[in-house]
Length: 512
Image (cartoon, rainbow, N blue to C red; front, side, top):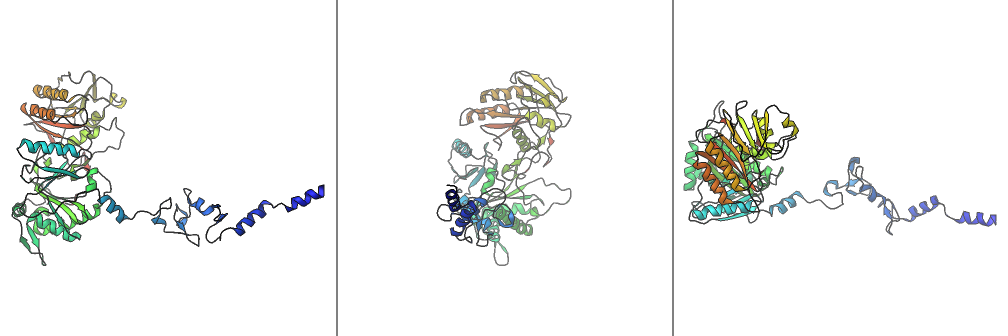
């Protein structure tokens, strides 16, 4: 019996023998290094290439490409980790460009030109409703539509809209725009300047007048102050505050080429001398709608105040977007709304001299901004602020109702409020403070109920403020949601001008 067991044991294949046999009879090792080959075996190369970290990529890095016969990875950058082919950048451009629909028709000389407005994306229909409402109240009609998120185009064939029309829900305006098309960067630049300045370029770049409306702008701009022209190069993706929008590089190149051409003709496009500060501001805006189609607008900006750098359209921040992020931890993200309001007004409280009353201050986002600006803050709320602010000697916390508080303060005073309340209560709050002359400057948010804003109550609040001797401007900023920000100042006040770049920075570069 023992001998029979030994014979049977010798006939059974050992694990090493079995592995050698399977490797010898499997697929060609030059094609795959695996066990079992095509008959359901597991491919070791495939398993290894799907791991994170080391893979079959070139150089031993995170490779997920195909394997060649020599075992090295080829076409690594053209394939994803899942093995599918990556989309070409041209394909991405074409796919995303389809979102801008329809593309605008070309404009012709001496006809009414369209207006373009930008807004916080997802509020395009609110802006369109506001523009339609304005046109109907002035006995006319306009055709407004949104070709891209955050962008509204208005056809105003009856010339209802004034050049400096400033809608509440608009972040930036491109009035009386032209639409041109060309293939190359240089050709697009020539077409834009030709359409906006009423000049044409022949073989030796000699200008010839081609448009009466543009000729008037050309004559005014030629006599404008040196260094007063700014150029903003835009693309649709900027309307959504994208960090790397499609066509931005091409748009910048168009702007650089236009700047080079404009400097030959216009002193306004040349650099300022040391210490000069122009009293007027001109803005040339160019937005590529596709690689070969551009919308452009040229206008002398209108001073809005109260700060000396507060203009409409906004010549400082492209698309009216100011970067107002604070790196340090803040009690809430609502601070951005206040910073956008201060940046828009272009004024600042006087450090160590201005007292700020923050109504509905909890948890303290707006109070934190004012403390960073060097102000003493009286914070009024039923709930305490962030512990850091509660320990601040420059913050006085008063537990109480924001709507019944009455200040007893001497010197310059600001009032800010981001309290949650019905629009009518916000109007009444503004009325009390304006009637009492308790503050020189007020920044207050009016919050709406439901989906649509109450534009009638908004108009009522503006009338109340202006009837009591204050200037009032209202904006829906990029950081606002279903709310708007009131910016109220004394008519004969003497505010401190905000230094450009000291609070909010440019989100996108400016060519000139």
